[in-house]
Length: 214
Image 1 (tube, rainbow, N blue to C red):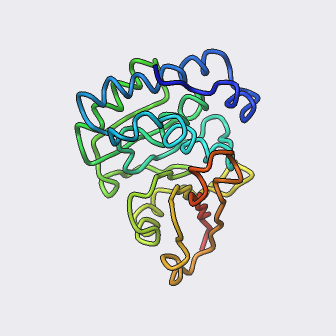
Image 2 (cartoon, rainbow, N blue to C red):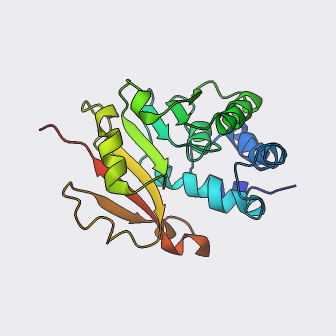
């Protein structure tokens, strides 16, 4: 049995319900079962799924708690991170999880179905093929961040209903200063180790890039 620290989740998110906690408790073992069929998480990393994948995904929620009816695009979702943990936490937010690899989307759909998540639409799709607009685009280190910005900025609606302007919320590890040297757009970096207590997050960042009208 892979454990989820539900006490810690309650401390982090005071609004969390018992039903949501049960979903989080079920999540690690669902992934372990599916990972034995279709590898979407490193096999050596599956025992650390709560901290390395679930909690890391929830860093976005610590920085930007989504309002109801928000529309989120998770680009290159892989096995469903950060989209699946966030969709559990925000049941009245719409999540579109896309990835170009069909077998990964198969796992995402199965996990969402088994948890009864009605706010998740998982689709095998390239970002360039999507024609919809969203409040936020989220992702976990799928590419060079300036290149990612160019790829997804057209998907972000300029009509915002959050205290944070609509934009990109991007999880990335390591030193990103060199990568962002030539990036001209405003951005803000959050240190994930200031959001959570685990040493795993010492080099992890959350980058926020807001969208502005020209």
